[in-house]
Length: 326
Length: 246
Image 1 (cartoon, rainbow over the protein chains, first blue to last red):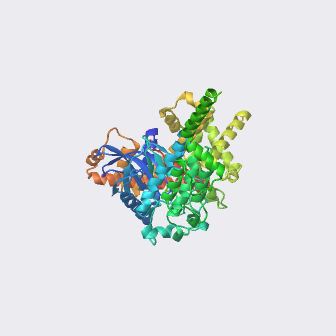
Image 2 (image 1 turned 45 degrees about the vertical axis):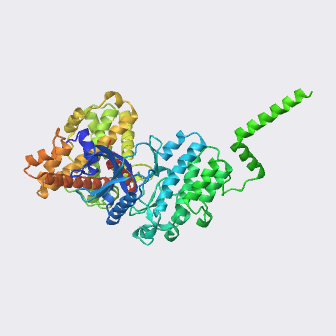
């Protein structure tokens, strides 16, 4: 029996890696493995740049998943926005598998990055940029349906990118095949961890427990609309605020976004973002009815400098008058 | 399993067969298990307990005999650990008891079907780059055992692939796979291989892709047969062929 040295072992372990010969790309390393596909870093030999290359796992290359990957690439190609990872190319490998390449995002996933932001306003501003990207997609008729911290990347210059549109739904295609792959609660397999995207026995992605709206979890596909993403953003807002003390208006915003009944949620991502912006600006938010005391407190915080200056002026004026008339 | 014997059908489970009432099937399952594990166990015991080759050989054969006599496989619980971990722990326990009793006797005749070439394993150990400083730590020995298990699994799969290629008249495919993936000839390109085997570069690409696919399929079948459960198989398969590019 032939003795295999350590180098041979490593090569053989990598033998499942896609063979990119015949393409303009050269494989570098595995970045991530998801429910449906694998993302590798690759070098574009023609343009001399690093790209991310997404491909189906060979074991799961069923025709419907191939169509899903093509569809994901085409959806991304239509969403040209600074907050959405851009697609560069799509093609076939020699073994017939479809791949597409996209911008290689260096940075950290939101779930790793958020701890670096120590102040609430910083975290909320980051959240608003996620909302911008999702609102843009909604305006183009695309729902993400798998918004979670692991699907948001923050680049080295603070750029925020919403990733993994593999579960996206084009709203106009309400009766498309995407709908048929969503499965009922009973059919769901138990997830390995709360942030894992739930995958059916056929490898079909449907959402992530904790971030997926109730109607999505129940498989009520006809009820899924922009408010399902609003629910996920509400969960994301809670995650982003995290361990920082969460003021009541912000709690109310999350609660409204994550309401069980879609009718009780914000009608759009823009409405949710507007409420968070109002909170940042010290203005009243639509999700919360404040008491008189809270209103005074907010008024004080918003005009703190002016109030202090006026108070200082009045105190000085009083002291001057008091001493001159003594 | 004797050399040249083709690997059993997919979904074959060594554990299930080892508990079978059919003596022939049981013996075959134990041979498969033995052929997959004897080298890793031998190397592991030899290094961990600083045994001379003869004593490590006796321990290895004795361990597998004990596995059979005490029906240790029937006590394995897939919910608690991987089969590999269980066997390693059993080997540890056996070796400690044997060394304490110091009454080791030659055993292992039950596995007569498997040719045990201990001198070849000693050659392998000499050829391997092992950092003596790292051997002392239990973690590094666990890693060592893991790597030897993978080496044993892949070696058997390569042997099966070679037999498959010969039976299908695809010796060139195996030769290309061997040069490129197994021997890792320095700076060899698909064009070099095409010239060497008088074929087009695209043919080299196709042949190597076919050989890799078959290697992976054979390895997966072996892995499934040697896994304690489907869950263990899934985890092992992902660990084996998953995040390996660095």
